[in-house]
Image 1: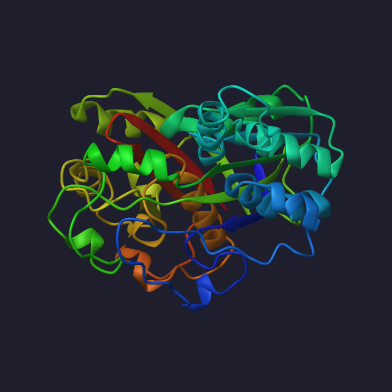
Image 2: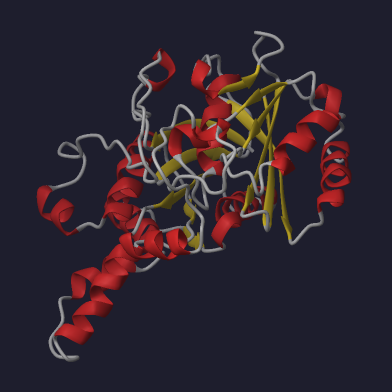
Length: 347
C-alpha cells in the first residue's frame, strides 16, 4: 500500500518541518511530553474543551489529512486509548458514590474515541476500527488496512496510532522498573548503561492508497508481528521476512531501530544490526520521542519522510554508512522484548 500524506504530533515539533530543519527539543527526566500545535482553527472551542489529550492529538493529526483526501475508512491502533479520562471517570464513581456522573470522561476515554471523533467530524461513514494490542497495535492496524486494500474493500484509508502519557500508568510502569532513575536527558539516554528508558506519547497518521500515484511518498511493502520470541529466532525471522519480499539483508539501505537505552533489552537491536545490517545506515527515534507501545508509528512517519527526500536529523543517526536517499528501509521495534514488529518501507 502507498502513503500519499502523513502527519505527526510527538514530543518533537513534527507538526511542521521544524524537526527536519534541525529544531530538536532536548527532554529531561522520564516523561517526554508531546509538543502540540494550536488546534483553534481545526477544532471548535466547545469540542476542544471536552477532549482528552489522546483524542485531541489524534484529531489534530488525522483531521487535516481527511480534509485533504477522500477516505473510505479509519483504522487506528492504541495501547491504552484515553486512559487518563478513563481513570478520572472511575474516580468519579467513587467520589459521587455511583450517583450522577459527568459523561464526558467516559465518552472520551474509550480506545475508539479518536476514530469515532474523526468519523463524526469528517462525516466518514465507512469502515471504522481501533486495534488495542499493546506494543503491536499499530502493526495490527497496518495489517488490517493491507487486507482491506487487497480485498478491494476500498481504495483509500486513514491509518495511524495514538498514545498518551497517563499519570496512573506512568506510575505503575515506574514501579515496575520501566524508566530510568536519576538525572538524564534525551541527549545521553541511549548511551547510559542502565536499565529503563523514558516514557513518551504521540499520534502519527497516514493516508494510504491501494495504487501508486504521483502523490505517493513511500510504499509500505509488508508488516510482520511476533510474540514471545527467543532471541535466536530473530535473525531467521528477519531473513524470512525479507525473502518473502524478494530482498536480502544487503538490499536494505537503512534500518530504524527502537533502541531505547534500556540495557536489559537493547541487545536485541545491537545483535541484529551486527549480524545482518552492518553496511546499512542505522537510525534511532526513542531518544526523540520516548518509549511507548505504538512508537513504531513515529518510526514509520520518519522513514517515509526519509524516502521522500527529507534528511534525518543527526540526533537520530546511530551509524551512517552513506548519504544516498534510501530505497528500502526496515523498521524493527520490540515492546519490552515480548512483542516484535517489522515494517518494510520502499520508494
